[in-house]
Image (cartoon, rainbow over all chains, first blue to last red; front, side, top):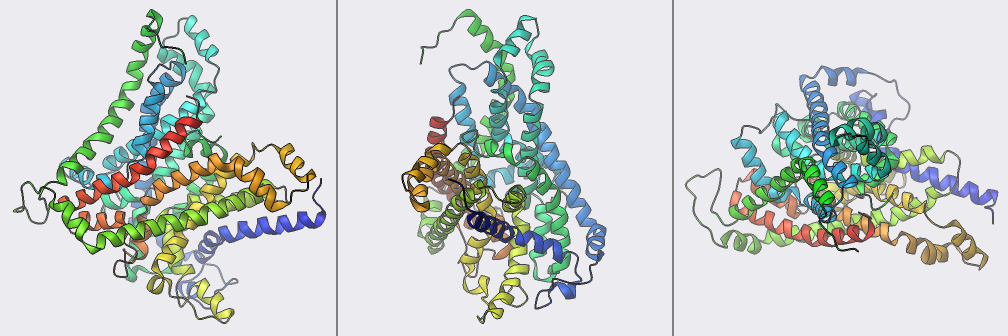
Length: 273
Length: 297
């Protein structure tokens, strides 16, 4: 039974309606970022106006913004690389050499992700304070890496599982040790999977707001914390807020769009593929 | 399942894999247990960073103080309202969008990208854009639309603060539900749908008897994953209402934050932390059991 042209039209209208409604806040933010402050708060809202790049110029020249951008990049990339270095060997071991504890170990790792951050806010804050890691990139890299490590291991595990064990076995027969197997056989085959995992880890770290806001002040504050300073009433400049927000969201949005299919298994711990 | 046996080759495998596993397992052990043990310990201590003279064993008094404070019950209530409302909105819209975007239409792949976009917007940006550009009672887009249709603009964060927070958080999480349910839809047996149509089933019946049963497992997973994340919602409240007006949007998470990093009451905040962990673990237990049943390890 084929859908009639009318049904097709209705579906297209509904689909695009839903899409535009969901995307409207993002589109409006981008549009507002090209307005002057006066036009930004104009009522009725302006759809046609003389665009300006002044907000971007202003935001980029704010010393704080560049600092926050640098922190976001260093922290999310740092936490991801560290997480992969630690997580790849573990996922590899469990995917190709499972034993009777593997399942329990995987589920236990998943359970550590269930811990509400606020439940350990005080100890983590005090530990960072005592060790001088409060408001440092290193402190945030460690916290983000630890909180994403279970997801990294799980996602890698599901990708590694798809590689035929025979290939690993063959290279083992040829005398390759675990590290050589990892480097020569696994990494090239699992490359796309590892890349997806890395992107998910970067997205999650980039957008993480609880630890970013609570463990940083001025030195290590990433973009999530920097944008939060716009919530102060005196900081309310809509066009500048929009420009800063657009710059903060754009790279991650593109990463997210690029990996949307593989993200599902990372977000559901492989339970939905 | 066969009984595991420790053959020599098996033992050799274990010896080889331990060095690979140790860093991950060791770090996660530290991460999972040391801070939690500290929270538990602090929750029985008199400990305030602003007043070092307060020390000593507190017994149950931190818990007693927390449980007896009116703010606590309100915060639990607010937490449940927030999580419940966002879950209902995201699951209903998630199913609707998954079914919709499973159909063929012009430009579907682009429309799909637009729908999932909000998930990648950082919470502080989402909250501030909504609060100001959209929901501002004077200059916001919603106020303009309300006036256009002859209504009085709503001052969301003064009169309906929780509804405001729910809208923002739901907008962020609808894409999550859509993305996962849409992926699950792709494994739906099309012939089953065709057969149901042949038998005269209409849209609602197909949804009720074919699609929803197929989506039951992913729906469970989405619901539980979202619950875990929604119990921890923080930044959206932090930048829009700071828990107010009064304590109208103070959830348990936000209450603990206030006790911890605003009044620096380590003991009291830790007692709250222990309760938050217990609350989340009730959900986590079910989630982990579901995942354990659904993935082949």
